[in-house]
Image (cartoon, rainbow, N blue to C red; front, side, top):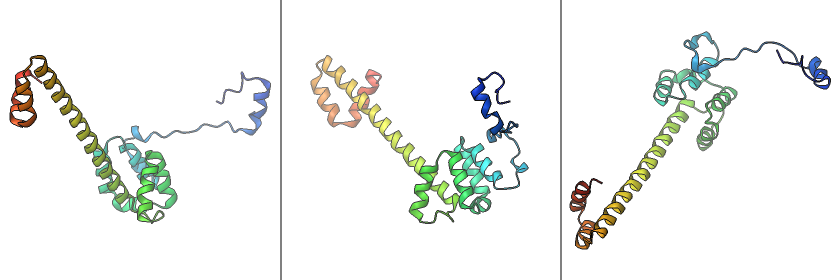
Length: 170
């Protein structure tokens, strides 16, 4: 299994020190029934499974608040590491000053809220950039046609500017 058969003799020397046994890999994303796990792995693997779909993740958290709230510090660390959000969630937990007994549900609620705020900020920035680009195009078109009075009016009158956007298809 380890492929030591075709290795140089030096590499083969470590063969006696490394156990050669099968390892079972678990991929939570492809598992249908998490109830096969009777320990905290059920909650941890379920969270990993739903991590790529924030709606399903949030729904799972709401439905399993009690079980998630009873995770120990080590179990919570495993969950955070597997979710890939360890640093952000640890920062949230530090702010609450209760790492060992942190309510993971509250931490995830805050993480989701942070994600929403971050998304809103990105959306606003993207919208602002798009708006600036539209105004830039309008200004260039009006200057190219030497319509300086329209350029000045569009700078002051929002409704007129919208009419010009429609007229030029911007």
